[in-house]
Image (cartoon, rainbow, N blue to C red; front, side):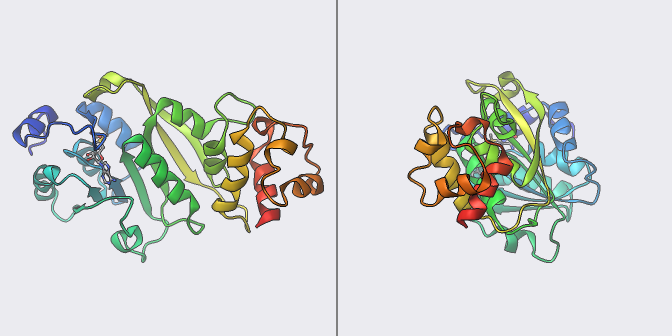
Length: 275
Ligand code: SAM
């Protein structure tokens, strides 16, 4: 692929009709792709783990920014287009055919370089959320430096929502107990080919020093119960979680409140008591 070749032509040349089953909505605008690739910050010489490169538009932008990229793509039809990129950027791109949900990322990315890998992905919504939770739930500090992930706008808003706001919920707590999370870029649906039904947004997450002694599984058990009945008082919604009401008492958290006003730190404190 030459630098100037429009992505539409790359896609046509390789017969990459978008697969709905694989959640394929491609971004063809190279300016927009360059803006997304700039979100993690300076990439010259940096390592990037990209999930779902597809025809390679974002991959190309990351390589142009100077990154060394390891990319995991499930759709083997995309491999010839990505092989052209590998040839155009010698020793800078490694493409792995596989399912990002199954792959042993540490062995792929290399355990010898912890904390120096930016993860960038434009993924189908369900895969993105599953991977986000996996990346948030691992040992801390994590093996990655930052996450730059495309989501449906509404999901992005849930990730960054503050307590007391409409979108605040399980995903907000899961993301914010371990990361600073912000919406870095709103992306109109027309930026994708084919255009999805809803708007998207890129979320940028940077790990922060995380509280010790809490596991994501326990935190999720508490938030799932609390937000599962978000209109109910905690003393009702957390009944099903053994020890949770006692933890609220010990922590001086009023159990007449609803989940949506409980801060991330308070949820973490409850989970720590139960861990
Ligand atoms: N990065 C390209 C872009 O921005 O135009 C493609 C984005 S498209 C929304 C999502 C890509 O993720 C597709 O190429 C799809 O085949 C790939 N994909 C979907 N599920 C995957 C999985 N579980 N593991 C790896 N890649 C996956």
